[in-house]
Image (cartoon, rainbow, N blue to C red; front, top):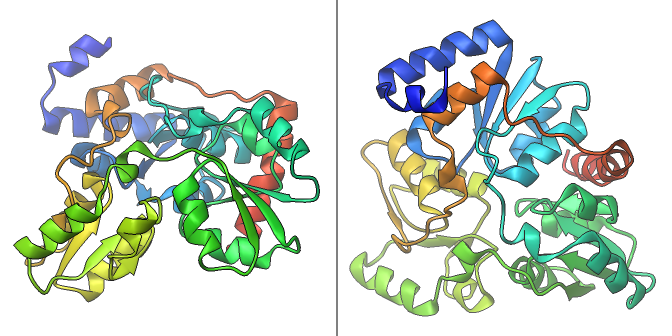
Length: 309
């Protein structure tokens, strides 16, 4: 069946069809916290980048459908070379990941000899292959702190690099990249939100600019934000609105407010139920990573997983 035909199905029909195809294909769906509600609902597991990377090594299935963006599907393939990994929307990339290339990183390393290279998981396989260790927003501080090197190159997110630098007694050399969703937040957004919801605590993602982080009560990854949602009846949440929607769905009776209603990742919203069903039926779009790149990138990812235990 083609994608246009699936687009005419109802949500209920698509949900049932995805379930049938998962059983038929021996497939598992891993969904990122920023996916739309309907995709989250058919996902077998939800999580942030770290959780999805961990799950990719644990699932017992022939086929992994990664509902997220390209670097996440690449990471799943790097860790599971013998499994089929699918990305339902081939154009779901990450602008921040595109802000650094492997060649640029090699040249940057040459200007900072002796520095350990830490790459955010939001990078291509080729960049991971040139790095010593990967990190996510939930483990970056702990991993940088655990490294032997006193000088660290951190790519590609300058805001997360600044946050890490504020928490460790090391020299952190940032790359000038950023997440366009989190970088858009302003201190004025915090002021306005607090004015609209007096007394409500503010949590923001560490990809936010330092001046926004300085005005927040908490700084947390998306998984950390979900834990805070267990503990608080209300929160103002500074991250992509898909996570805020999940919070409200999983905590009826509580109120979680987006720091900005405009905090939408266009790439995360490219995946919908018709594409998930079509990808499962046709086993598209399959992710492949050249073996030499995969092997080197796996070292950085495995080291992250080992240091995150």
